[in-house]
Length: 112
Image (cartoon, rainbow, N blue to C red; front, side, top):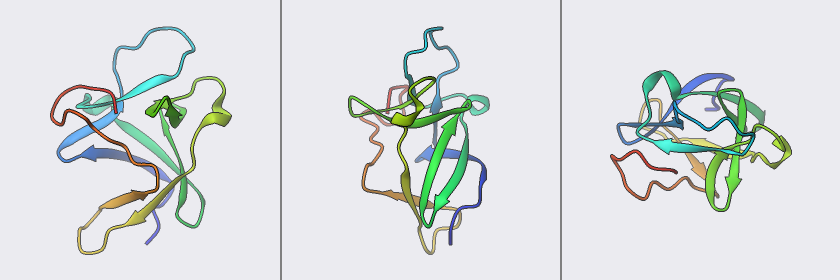
């Protein structure tokens, strides 16, 4: 079952994951954090093909920078295409294959 294009929340357990409410005003890649405010955590998911997707937070595509998940305001060609699969028997649950998002300190506000 493929994800539909649309708006989603990404969770690590019960913690929302997304861009921080307070960011610097530079054009540097914006970090993605665990334990984020619900209004700031919404993602746009766009299907590329099959189980491959582009993920966007606050309008910017997600990718990796120095092994950390970030959103690119410029140099958006650096964004990843993420492989996401449906997890059977757990309603509304999907997982990513290949590159994974790791939260080093669960239940704390820290970069993914």
